[in-house]
Image (cartoon, rainbow, N blue to C red):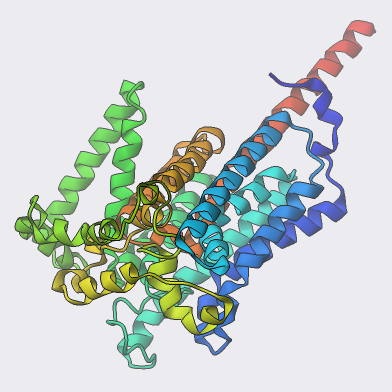
Length: 472
């Protein structure tokens, strides 16, 4: 219930010092996760890719400590998320102790997974005016537009041989600002589509043609970068979202009809139109033998899980896994491989599962052809590193996010896309993408808060006006 005494509290009138400090820190922290790849590719030290692991928690601490909000709902949500993060940390420490994982494993494993929750909390817990909200939104839109434009520019440069991308195919090298990273193409395309959808749904004062143009440009990036799985993920997330509305038959029917029309149209386009990028889907439609219970795709996808189970030594491994960074998570599967020269001196520890999983990948034509069937993926990594207790704690964080902060269809669609990405690859642990999703959900939350405050002020003004009339 609304507390009328909160209207005159600092929640609605933040001090200028707090507003500038918190907003600037949030923007800076986001930028250090969004742009370091391309800065590193331009010659900056690789360590720049770790800067956001320090700035995001710092921005969160400043925002949570200095916020003047008295809104009980915001405070309750913040404490619930903080408690869940601490629980997750406790399980990670227990897993590290059981499996003799390094301290740096714990820090990086924790930050990779809870960093988006910290950024979201920093955005949610500060009071924003309309002007500060617009500034925050402009930074996100501007960053996403730069990513899209860079990706579109990379296409002709790669075709002309102006960019040295020998380690990638020409399509995979179209990575926007996430240039020269393993999943950069998928991350860049996912960010472009997510922000284009946000712009299409929310920029109501902008011409519909401008909003559609941004969406089409993001779709074109998907085609030229051969990021087919991004489209699959968004469609699957859309289907899952429709299932959450089972209590509303009208919406379920609308979603179902839309999904059927889209899938039929897409299948027809793949089979009948000669559109660059769509021909790659034909393999998926024709090789049905890959997907049976004994199919190569299924066996390959589960290879990492079988390897993890083969190293269990006690019942505690079922609860706490093999240790943070010791299996097929982004930390164990990618970070240690790419940054071992930086992390080994800090006491990082590894496990044979990670290398053996890569051996399986390198020996499989299917894994090398499509990341859709990779045995290294986020949900297997979280379970493998931290066991069922860690997986349960992380799902609890997701439940809080879904039930407390994601109150609109777009926010929930984004959460579901991350859930599906986690079943395919380690994209659910890519900071550039996860922080963008957190940023978008935070903007949706703040926009609802600003609208609610405007309604409440209007009601109070009307009530005061009525009281004055009655007095006279």
